[in-house]
Image (cartoon, rainbow, N blue to C red):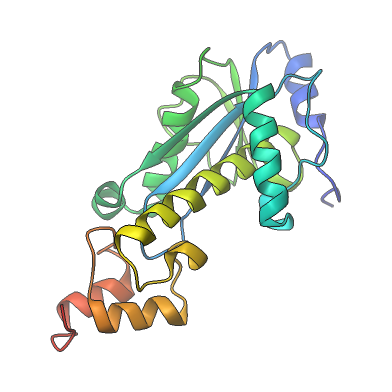
Length: 212
């Protein structure tokens, strides 16, 4: 049974096993039709853990933004992406794992153990790891990573929305909402759309009437 709040039990177990530098890793953006997939790796300072860390999906946008800034100030953090081209070339799961591996490798100090949200451990991690299903609601380090990844990607999609208005990315983060679908019908496909995703593929190869 999962705990109602994340804690440090996974981190402490890893430390008891002899690991000194333990990080949490999470990604966001597997489901959207547009934009990169984004991952964060976070090594918390156990003496400076921000109050209220939780699965990013359980927090308001205002709370996420505030916690993001506190995490950046108090922890070792790296954010990395896998591009739309990489998603289309390799598939979304492999691209998510690539972003995770990049985030871990990009920390100021390579950790000796990683806690990964999900049920699979990415290839090419620079350290041993443990996969934790629903880890963003169970491990404080993964919860912190989920918050950072979500905030960074949401801000990126707001920036892309300014370059490509009409798809609603500033509010839907690239997910296939009604506004996004209307934008595709009216404006066509942008370079930031994932062509390997079925709705975009169908527009490109069947929707010959889509205006550009």
